[in-house]
Length: 460
Image 1 (cartoon, rainbow, N blue to C red):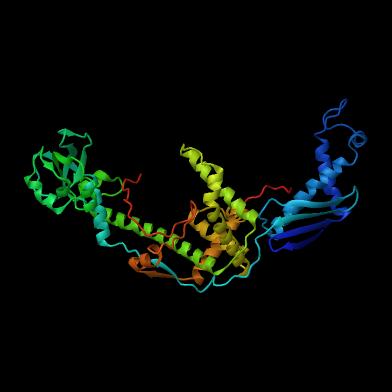
Image 2 (image 1 turned 120 degrees about the vertical axis):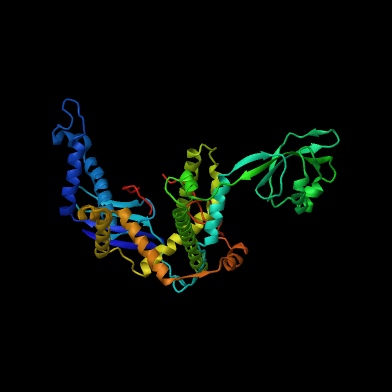
């Protein structure tokens, strides 16, 4: 068998394969024999008609059909053996065969364009340094205490701390309440210090002017030409539980005392910050390399990435029982993300090529050894698993990630400095779905109640 790869363009190759008659004949005859078993001819049992009868009816068409099937199988065997990794569903453009003679065919397929890259090594990637401090843990504990607090109605309040004032809007012209009650916490930042200081003197039924209630002038101005004031409907005092082992056991099945809860909160935020800064690192690394390299990506590949995004968003809407988005709207919204993702994919494939990153048998053996020790699974089973195309591709991208991190070290800087340099200047790296935004961090309460493109195996 002769195999030859022809480069049609920077983004398309052609695999040309020729089999001698001795190589092609047994493969084609085997396909013909399989087909004959499915043929039903009147007067004969299915698959039992004599060959000369079938020959008279079908002529050489069975062999030509078989040649197509053989060419398809031979091509995909070559794809795997030569690690061709076509981007699209390949197209059979030329097949030459006559019964009893050689078989030759050509298949065109798209590839990642080979480009020369710059500045994909030697960059210092700045990320924010978030530290798990005692203050952070204390803040989370206070959140837990507050979220598990009870409220007790009282006749009056001594101060604003741990208090709630129930109010309604009152129309002084008609002497009626609006029926829109609100619970205002004593530490609410939009209420004035004067109002907080007046709390001990207030009684149910008292009226408070917006100018005495709010701390911001624009809120006061919004009531200027109205007859509205605020009427006091009641007072409540927050009963904050004591932080002790009993409280911990009440809110959590996992932790038994305050010390273990503190450790759990610290561990959660350690993992949370690590995950977040990893995403920020990846996002900034991607931006750094893409900004340094102008790339032309095959439009068909961008369209396939875009189709994937659209399918993903549509499936998400179905699962959440939301109205299905319009495809045209999604195409407009996600086209920039698809272009960026396609470019990044081209960059990664070329780094793999340039740096000759390969998943060797020795590397697989190392992975197998690690997993055997961890999960106590048979080596043979694991070897077969790791040599599967999808898993092997994941291992290859794992090698790429490791290489990029080694060549582009992270530099941790003060979060305020990071925010000023990258966030406040709107230097965001927006990505679709699993593509992470290069954003500043925000707190999330910790829940302590813990109980490459796949191708069909056919050519067009």
